[in-house]
Length: 290
Image (spheres, rainbow, N blue to C red):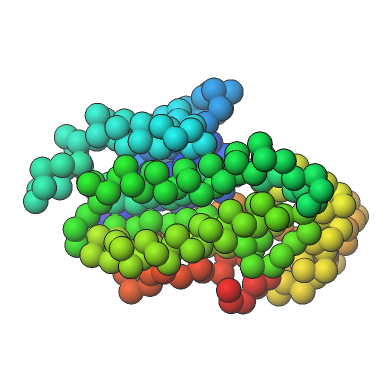
């Protein structure tokens, strides 16, 4: 296939939280463009499903996709991903100038969310969310520093959220973690300017296990926001009665994981080389700017 068909041929990427939802969709988007991948997962219970995902991507897109277990909430976890990359891919992805492994793409997708009102927040959940959503990405990029490109061709994309800017009730902690991730995105774009572009995307509600686990009360609070999201509004005339019922309750439709993944894929391409330090809208217009 031509470069236009496989624009990420020869690249190596890391996708954290790659076993399901947006992470799995991102992995497929990148693999379809020729990118070899390390798919990180946290829970041993996900080992079977993610192994199947990796095998399918390898076979379907003729890439090398491998799964690796590491807890992004453990201070030692992120570095083990990079160590694994060095052991697994140095022979096939060596930077000729440095003689070291080259990691071209990092997608910080792994995340956790607990919706709690002020009085219900606990130190344990606070630290867990910040460890996974903020410290984990920082430590992964830190561990990967020696292996990033030196020609600005690297791509780092952080999975943020509309929660970083919209002030949803019960998201003192989760929204704060995503705002912190956006702040790091801007800082990294300066520090890594000669190595890689660094951007965030900010999805709204997406049809994932994480969003499915939110309470009915939270969804009711979110409905007015969805009702004013341009791309969440659709013609319901061809929907089944059950689909119409769900649509009405939600105030519109949620995004599909592949839609968020498509924006990540766009930011990983050569054409995105003049875009850095930005939070890119990936929410159908729920948030026009941040």
